[in-house]
Length: 107
Image 1 (cartoon, rainbow, N blue to C red):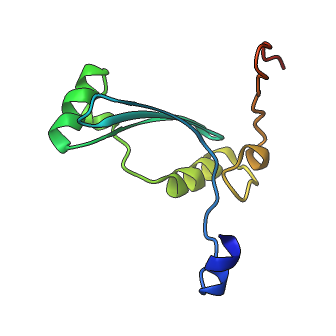
Image 2 (tube, rainbow, N blue to C red; image 1 turned 90 degrees about the vertical axis):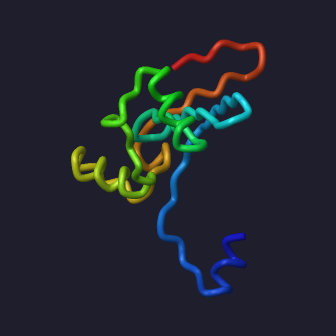
């Protein structure tokens, strides 16, 4: 895909990694993302459903973050003085533990 997009004149502008878990009630989605700069939740659906679901989760409108991961990453870099050039676990220096089936994860 990278080669196709480059051939069409596109250039990469931001690269990031995340692990996502999703839940749905049929009207919207609640997702949890584990990223190299922290864990974030998203509540996605119709506006009223978002507000009702966020309230049920104890999240107020003042807690809403509407930024995408790119500006969040660059703000994190500014705050932490990180030299990471992309929001990947390797670049940020986070270790991801992968548990083989039937074994316990350890550090």
